[in-house]
Image 1: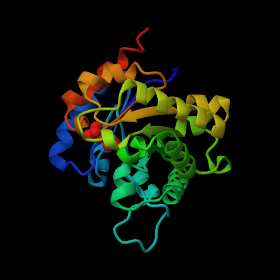
Image 2 (image 1 turned 180 degrees about the vertical axis):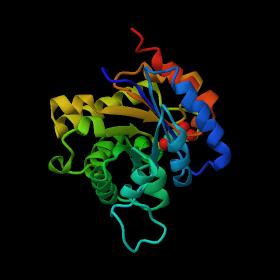
Image 3 (image 1 turned 90 degrees about the vertical axis):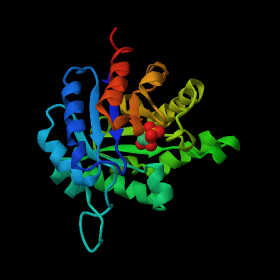
Image 4 (image 1 turned 30 degrees about the horizontal axis):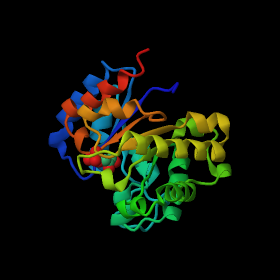
Length: 257
Ligand code: 13P
């Protein structure tokens, strides 16, 4: 892996202005871990205040609408989050797919809109426990990812920089137990092969693939040692600077050589 490891905190629906001190602490610590790219995706309401103060970390959104604007009460577009200071957006998280009924086609449309708004995209995929138990996880991920990504001719030329994939098995999110190294290695290998197939050898090899699902400071090093793991998308453990930066520290070590 030639690129810096990418450690992204997904704050989900956590955080009021009281959390700005935590974001400050993450930003300060990130300045001491320059081998790692650190970012957080707070709720929409904190994007601008964090962006305004941040010196090192990137700030992103957890979703955006597939249109630029219009009569969509309660929705926020990619252009709006970019205007607030977001440089990236997480799309297709399983909590949106299941909680808001987002289809692969909608996620694909959102990705197209986000790229058009100049954002980088972290595109999530992940199978349920039932899909894994039925032995269909690999086929499911291939299909989900292919259907959630815009067609190759709709993608920006600098796609390797603009796109990150996050593999987040639903059964590992928020459980305290991440997927095993073997499961992660298998799925990241499948995703890498698919990216090369879709984007060509050069760009497909460069796109980072993050693992997400119960990443903590004490299991992070083992996860980062797995082949094709380019970083982590972290939920619960990203809510305090101590635990989040413990993960960032673990990410800097395998790459020291
Ligand atoms: P946890 O790290 O809390 O398991 O959440 C993972 C996740 O869903 C990040 O997007």
